[in-house]
Length: 138
Image (cartoon, rainbow, N blue to C red; front, side):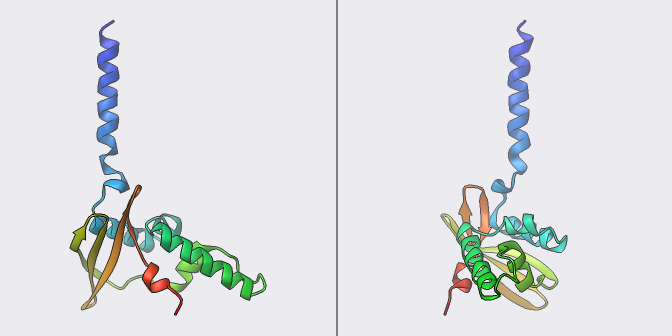
């Protein structure tokens, strides 16, 4: 009879260890690389999930505005809107964390002899790419 409680504890420990590979446990550079891998695989929904909530909200607003302006010819789909306007990054040769302070980090993306900085924010579900500054209306 004592075996049952011990097996329950073992099962809980295994489940906890199995969760260590969750996206929420990825550091900023690995989260960016996961986003990039989903982009390469054209898995738009999974890649879109690596965008911050404010970025997703801004994209939703832009997609709705585009749909309204087109008289309904364009769907108000923020995922499709994002991927129609963002090309796949060129050959990325490296991603590293430039700095991380609290819930904000900057990663450096090396690609085709160009270095870009990408702002990342930590949300409850993990590190996300934050494009809100570049999506602001002029």
